[in-house]
Length: 147
Picture 1: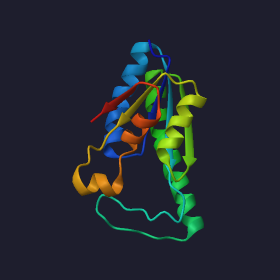
Picture 2: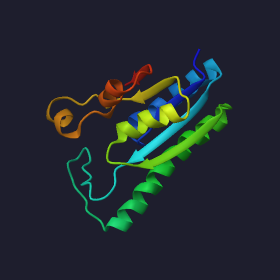
Picture 3: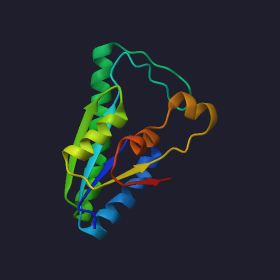
Picture 4: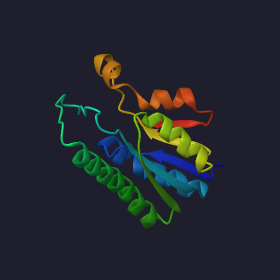
């Protein structure tokens, strides 16, 4: 049924946990897996779940973020390879990760987007936003949300 599945990953514990599920889904359908990891450019003030902010030099920040994004994709690539699932990895830097996710799905001919959701509520949801909700609002593709 599905031939090209997009799996955005941010390297979080939830994304890592969802990797096994999305790989099994791809195997079940004989689908190719495309994974994307998107980071936000400087001068974005990174705020983690702990609420701490770190402001490194712009060049250092961008290099570190690109390396982290590539590492996120490499982990999914290794799991896909071990399972014999065809794989393609994509990284990007953009102020709007959801836009990059939707564009990547379109560019790679994906017919399903599988995302892990943090399930944030209250002020965390208000301030940190929900990339999953933004993807749902801006794509015509089916989106499977894993928690």
